[in-house]
Amino acid sequence: MKIGFFDSGLGGLTVLKEALENEGLSEEIYYLADTKNTPYGIKDEEFVKKVIYDNIEYLIKIGCNPIVIACNTATSLCINEFRENYNDIVFIGTEPAVKVAADSNMSKKILVLATSITVRREKLLNLIDKLNIKDNVELLAADELVTFAENINCNNMKNEINNYIESILSQFNMSEFSHIVLGCTHFPIFRDNFYNVINKINPNLDIKVIDGARGISNNLKNYINKIKGNKKYVQGTKKITIVLTSKNNDFIVRTKQILANDKIEVDYKLQ
Ligand code: DGL
Image 1 (cartoon, rainbow, N blue to C red):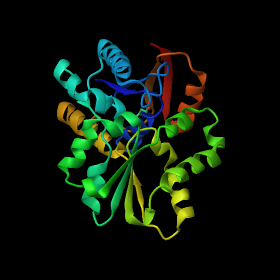
Image 2 (cartoon, protein in one colour):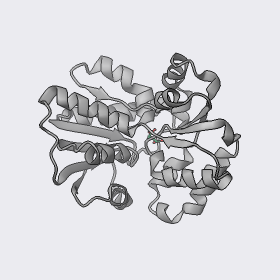
Image 3 (cartoon, rainbow, N blue to C red):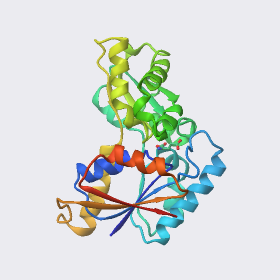
Image 4 (cartoon, rainbow, N blue to C red):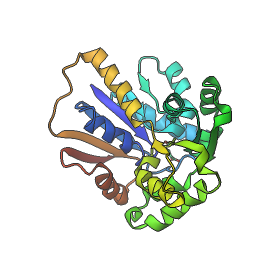
């Protein structure tokens, strides 16, 4: 089985890492990063949709099925259409983990951070409506975190990143919140930064910073189990192929930093 993963850039690696490390995924994996067009969240929706379609068609052409859309922005823009248009392919999408937060504690509010496209699309708004939690949810675009995550010097930019996060959180009275939902797959790269800033604002705050990676990799595991039975999760070295849409050496360095696991062997190729 060839499994496709797709994101505009590095963000989907947070999902892939979860699937490889916690679920022991050991299938043939192709991870397509649209390095040519990242970031998506601040761009024109029609343009973004077109490039997402091109990328998904590439993954289908090389034989990937299922395809994990490891990108909230692409999921909110396209997944319903994909399921209609490519009905022999299984798509596993990414949604902000709003339900997880809502199920665990609704005595306080939830702050959802995502890209500009995700926060304005009906997919997320419908989910919040369906859960009937509108009055307890604040939505905010935090696109700058995508740019920080893709930056080769990211690990030396702690102050800038923390200041940006603080500028976001200081717009709210954080003592009213129990959860921050990271609704973009790039954002979990900064989970520690979020906790540092929360602690700086007030060490007594009890706020969980959550994302959807575990849920997505569970969905993937359940699907593979259904198709192949329970035997395919084996220990050992995992091999993945990362396909880039433009040459980008910084991406390769950042991939090593993010995956940081010598049991994962990575090959790179240009689309
Ligand atoms: N990682 C993506 C997401 O989950 C895309 C971010 C972007 O390219 O703006 O939304």
